[in-house]
Amino acid sequence: MTYKEYPTLEQGSDTWVAARCGILTASQIGKLITPTLKVASNDTSRALTETLVAERLTGQVDFIFPNTDMQRGTLDEPYAREHYAEHYAGDDGPVTELGFATREIGEHKLGASPDALVGSRGGLEIKSRRPKTHVRTIIAGTVPAENLPQIHACMTVFDREWWDYLSYAGGFPAFVKRVYRDDAWRAVIRDALNQFEDNAARMINTYKQTVGDKPVAPRIDHFADEEMSF
Image (cartoon, rainbow, N blue to C red; front, side, top):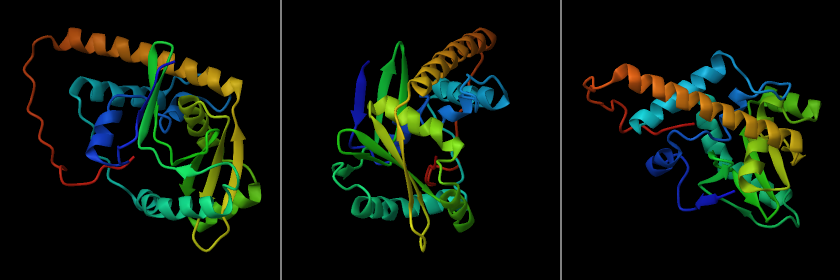
């Protein structure tokens, strides 16, 4: 399986956005997998497929307005990573940043932007939480189910044995839980990627047959000076 790193990309930059354009990534794949580890076929999975197909057809990514949770996550991430490196990484190895990477799984490509890689065996997923959500996670003592697809997809892309989940909120102890590589998750991620690419190929083919040689409207980027957020 071909693996490619983009070590100099800064997450959120224009070049980072361009590198991810049209590629299914770890942060998105949860929309293609059901809670019972089946490949989803619903409005959510179809909407994601349509979004990435549009990116492939135009080479452009639509601007996403960052809400307060997204902004807090961006601002908190370096503090959370530093806190983890100081108090939780231990002997697992250095905590390093990497902008983006892809891995070809069979005939298709899956991408991921890790919050950190840890040594040669692990990685880190950081979630900056509102206090009430953070307290709920600490009491539950488990990784929220909605975060597991992203974690396992990161392990697949980076071929890591484990990935630490970090729930972070200033003024509280961090919650850290280690998730280990799992064959069932790797299988459903591969199946979801294959199904997505099949659906995308059919959609693109139908689009091109329908559009033909109709003139294309000029693209005007009304948000060119805004920052992208994912």
